[in-house]
Length: 307
Picture 1 (spheres, rainbow, N blue to C red):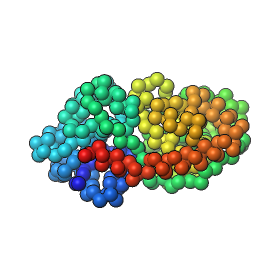
Picture 2: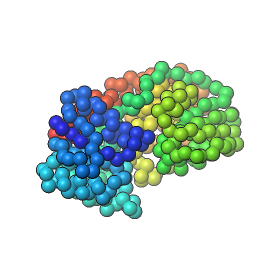
Picture 3: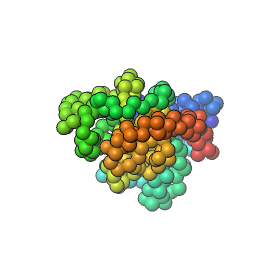
Picture 4: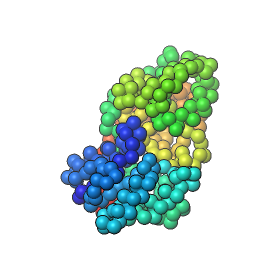
């Protein structure tokens, strides 16, 4: 099968890696001819659209693909069906595509509610650019070394994280990795904050450095509820203790492979008080991820979705 993903962004975008680059390489290994195409570069057997960075070009390419009898897929990993500037595009692409795919059950429910279309869930794999690390947990470190990473649109979760971490009466060093340059370092009470620009090198360095990975969110925000588990997955696969606010896609990890709860300071305290259980959760989580979320397993999901 000749498959083409329509280019959306560069590899600093998690969605570009998880929804295009990683499945593309895995599908190639399963014998498919797969490429990334841009506007005006012809038509394959299957054309997969995602994200919303080139709306006008996407709509023209979708129209051309339909005219050329190319099977079209719209892959949805963000809930912007009611977002000003995106809503019309999301509805139009969803209605026009032959197949609609998405990353989580909650996103599937949103698509059904907003458009009436039945979407097929294709999971995120782990990030093959990041090496699997040896499981490690060091209790009662001084300072407590915590890593946050994500797209700059998620930086609005840092304030709530700091408020919770400041309940811990110990020195904390928080490294924040994002794709937003020029952010100032600082301190909030007992938490020192150091910003690093996203790169694979920085991700590898600080995944090795940290003891905790913190993944906060804004609870009950509808655009956050559809997010996938990929940040939790990569943290566990790196061999580190993940503490995260509850999202539906994180439930597979709750009480088994990570610490999931509403106050992340409780997660730090729990792990320090239960270091053997913390380490065991990481180790079991790594086994689960390798068995269920490898790129090859996800490539099979893409094959089933594409038919």
